Image (tube, rainbow, N blue to C red; front, side, top):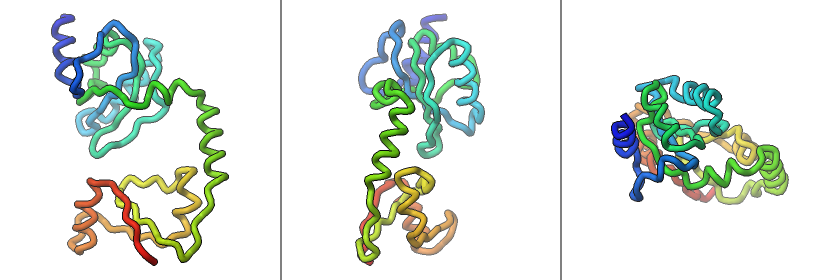
Amino acid sequence: MEQIQRALLEHLWQERQDLPPLNEERWWELWFDPRISPTAVATLRSLAEEHRWRVSERAIHVGERLVAHVATTGNELAFLLATNACPAEIRSPTFAEGLYAIDREFRLDLVKDLAARIEPAAPESPAVCILDTGIAQEHALRSPHCTSAPTAIVSPGSNSPVSMFSQVMVRLSGALLLPV
């Protein structure tokens, strides 16, 4: 059974380097497909509590996937393979270990401090057009600067040139400076 679980973990592993040793605890980045299992993250949290794994406070959407981080051994991670929290992909997170090792209150203090030091640009300054459907206008660092600016919403499926352009560009998720 262990050989089958290892083979499945290796199949789900999406990194160039080999699958890390399964007996060492580390952070894993789990990519779920909500169309296959809409409750995968809730199941992950339940299992994490039961097995005393550390798990990220929130999952993020990346395209059609939902990404969460969990700290455990690969052997324990294999428990997920027989549940509805089986990920579509497993990756090595590039930031999770450092980010989650920092106290949450300290992280919030850093965000508040940075938000207090940011000054809005003058009205005659260039404007920034964010080409991303996932903009979080309520984010502490963005909200003071997004709410007063004019916003154009282009709905997917529209046949306008702007809509067709935005549907192509949204996959690039870039920013474009426009003179005002």
